[in-house]
Length: 117
Image (cartoon, rainbow, N blue to C red):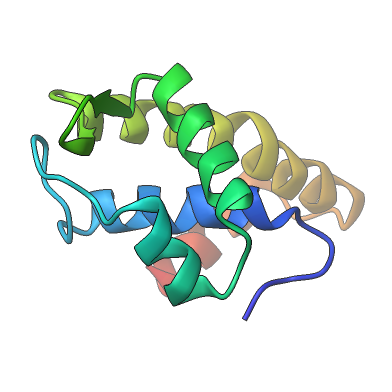
């Protein structure tokens, strides 16, 4: 299930974020407990705790004492903004660099993108 080249806690963070973006968990919803995640993914609870702590630091989740981890309000917009920025700064730059090497002009690249859209 997990990729070997990416730390498991990073992959778990991505799964949680994808679940938030896809609407599995909405803003204000409680997500599963550390124990439930550990059982579901077959990993050490400390791995889950590391992923959740990072998401708490990024203000994606809030740990409410006695309740558990809750999806923060306004987080979907924040996640989308961050993911778009990362896409444009990393993947899109990589595509543009490769297109230039292959001598694909902007119009050709645009046509290819539109045909696959």
